[in-house]
Length: 260
Image (cartoon, rainbow, N blue to C red):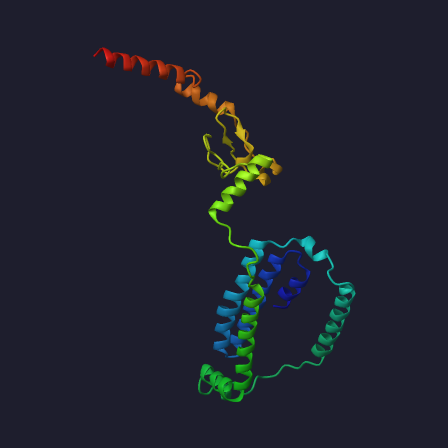
């Protein structure tokens, strides 16, 4: 538990710090179990480790926190102050640990005589009922305050389909922006992977069909007329001659029907 707690301070990635924090919380739950506190053991595993910490971990994995973000100082002088406070904390911990003596735990049987959960409920709703209710009111106030701060009043009228269409037409007339949605990758191509660009009617790839991130990384698949050439070889026909032949065939069929 101590090693994992120290690892939280020295690892460079936030995801690794969250995983080490999970180790600390699970170790704390084991300590609760050793001290014959099954209710706190279950709450520590289910609520803190299983729910809250996993939520933090998923948020870090989805949003992403770069290691370079931690090097930017938003408050001047925070690094020297952090070192000073950390050094004072280390001194206090060393002094406290040097005076620590281990003995047999007493009072556990008496505290858990009627059951650990029953004894805990009796303490919460008798001796500590005011503190318990004040904590619950504080949490509710914090939740309502977070919702109020996150709420945003609409300053402009809601856009309708007609206004969106008019803006697209105006953008097309001014800048030549694409009117409709961009073509998805793999359209008229031999593969439907996200890195395979769609093919235009002339067989050339459509750059707008592939994410700019993939194009910048150089992972976009090369495609184009060679795919059409392969399909033409497989079919044994030339697509350029198909419209004329189809027209001749249609004219011949119509003339035969007129003769009949």
